Length: 166
Image (cartoon, rainbow, N blue to C red; front, side):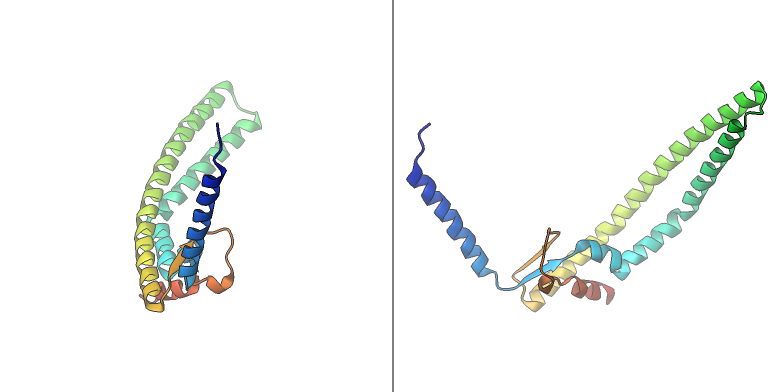
């Protein structure tokens, strides 16, 4: 394969010039920490409370089933059981374990579905607030979820305040 050095150099120069042109055109830059928005905004806290109210009783019921299983296992581990009693407790444990797994899987699925629905609405609202903030304050570029950002670009608090004021 024959390398065409002048063409490769020209292509590299074009890429560099284009990236500098884009960088030069950005005058005002902002950064959003979405994780903080999802943890600290009033709407996010309301979502957590709503989910706790909606699923708390079922989570407690699952914990009671786990506790029953622990108690049955402790009885088995004592070793002072007749063979009939041991089989009965083992069968109870198997049935309890199956019931617990089924209920836990169902609860997890329903919880995640509701959580995703609620946070999707929050995300849409946050995106709207971010867009309004960017247009109002003259931002050229707002980014989120980066490895490092200088704190002077962080406008997360402004977004949280705007969300909380709604």
